[in-house]
Structure formats: C-alpha cells, structure tokens
Amino acid sequence: MEGLPLVGRVPSELGDLFVRYAESRGVQVQYSQEGYVGAEAFGFVMRTQQADDALLTRPVFVAREWADSVADAQLGFVPQAEWMVRR
Image 1: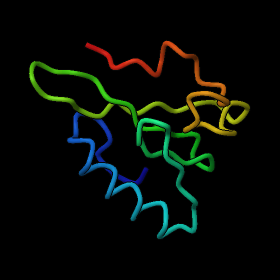
Image 2: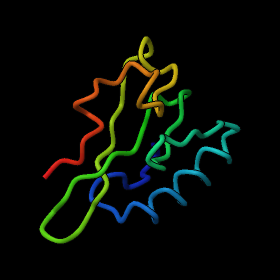
Image 3: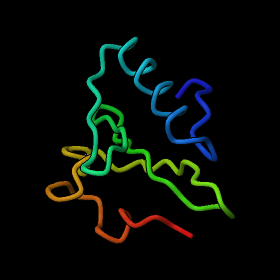
Image 4: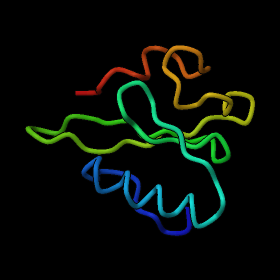
C-alpha cells in the first residue's frame, strides 16, 4: 500500500491513516462489528494482536473471491478464527 505501515501500529493511528489513504484513491472503507477498518477494493481488513500489554495492528489481506464483505465478521468469507484477537 505504497509504504503505508500496516504492522505493529496502534489501531486508532492506523485506522485514521488508512481511511485517508483509501479516500484519496476513491475507495470506500467499511468497519467491522468490532470497529476495525477495511476495504473490499483492497481485500483488506485490519485486525489486532496483543503484544505484552499493547494491542497492535495485524493486517489481513484476502483473495479477490473473499473481498466481498471483508470487514463483516458475520457475512464475510474471512474465517471466524481470524476475528479473534491473537495473543
């Protein structure tokens, strides 16, 4: 994503950066039921992983076939296990 740092970020910081990145390219963003940002056009949803006492970002990219509803934990194609916070 043109140098946008996606891994190991504070979720709120990456969320803001990602929204600006997507909107500058005319891409609509979606939010998961938990509030994580994603974009079907990129096949991307931001997830988190716990690192010691911090919660940091862990991007998930999916194939074009799974991009529809990528940010939807209920109706999307991303496996349910992927929606759990990693420790």
